[in-house]
Amino acid sequence: ISKELINKGYEVIILSRQAEKKNQGDSKKSFANWDVKNATIDKEAIQKADHIIHLAGANVAGERWSDKRKTEIRESRTKSGELLVKALKEIPNKIQTVISASAIGWYGADPQIPNPKPFDETNGASSDFLGATCKLWEASISPVVELGKRLVILRTGIVLDVAGGAYPEFRRTLKFGIASILGSGKQIISWIHIDDLVRIYIEAIENKSLEGPFNAVAPKPVSNEYLVKEMAKVKGGHYIPVQVPSFALKVILGEMSVEVLKSATVSSQKIEKSGYSFLFPNIETALFNLNKKAS
Image (tube, rainbow, N blue to C red; front, side, top):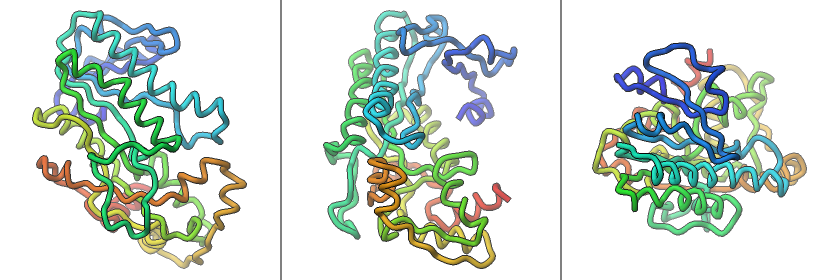
């Protein structure tokens, strides 16, 4: 996001706990201090900015979900949101827009597969761990609306990117000629290519009509089995499809296996109706592009 913003002529300030170590005299990109734990933030950064993009949050898939890890996942999102709200209340500023990440974990699992009615932004939050976390996450940043700021919340699907996340994990076993299908493989994955996600964040800054929650997912979700087999096809070579049983995933991942095996069919209609046009609306073109980058 920083790279694309700079390419478009924006100046970017990144809030970091180690700003001094990272600053390198770049006129377009600088770092400023914040410390969520101690509720401190660089006043000058808030005073200079026109827009805030709030992406802070511990990696949901980083490790098993112990009670301690769940608290860290939740509080890394809510306390950072609360700190930004506090800063905007107390520091004179010219902030016009606040864009906050959220996740399609808001919606929970499909009631059936296939789901005849994909989740849209009018659906309430699920009562499961991620649904409750997303609800608190969004609530923590929502008071900025009362401060006269335009708030856009992007409920993000599974991001496909060569640099990290789900794509390298799905691709890992292909090196050994194995296409790993998780569980039944029928679970629906609502995905988005990293380039589209970046463009939607910039669209949220520049399109003043955008307000409230939007699903950041591509128009054509696919099953886990289709995704894995299409990755193998695009990569080329011979692969043996191997199903990884649900019980094995539960042993390896614990409670987090619920998310790996969950089917979530999420609608992109609202963001499309706003005028956004996807670079990668279908999985075939997305995987072709990513495979080219990874090669």
